[in-house]
Image 1 (tube, one colour):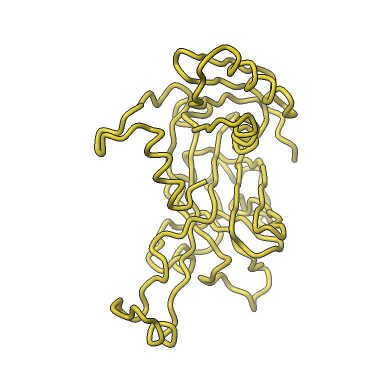
Image 2 (cartoon, rainbow, N blue to C red):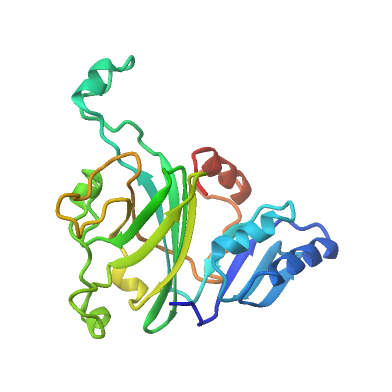
Length: 270
């Protein structure tokens, strides 16, 4: 179902003059669904209103040669994010054959192998949009689901079954279609895929749950979820609404938001 309810997003964008602002505005107005663009050169911020996915907005800004950091989306307490990582587990054979077998058998091959990002914005009391961006997976159709638990001790295998919803999210749902089934995303030959989905739940209902992207279809009893190189999972956490986040320097590290952005990109963050 197409996203029709507009929402606001706020991006930090390096701009030097009004010409920069004009370039960004022109690039964004080419996107379907954009209704308003307000650059602020002094504050280095761009406020956008419409129905375009945040990932598409970032791509449009980057097409002008500038970086962009999402600073907030939607109203307060209406946004969430999930960093999607692999939890592929070493087999006994792999651990034994590894040249760096100082780690205990059964340890994770990668402590943090980021393969995707999910951004959520609640756009009405009954609708939340989910913007999925995936990188580095094998081509094919993948299934996006919210799980019953947020336990990632054993990756996807400890995240539980598909989330069946709360009373508010299941009022209009049938038992055959629990709200935890978000939809599918196609991964192309370049290992990339995007999907912009909307679903009838509120953001507060899914905070703390796991979100999984997997090629396995659980309707086939012979293919339960498992940790492999093409299955990614992350915890859904609250993120800032528009104007909720005015931080420009991290109080822990002393780094600017652009320095933090550079560090995260080097780790695979999108």
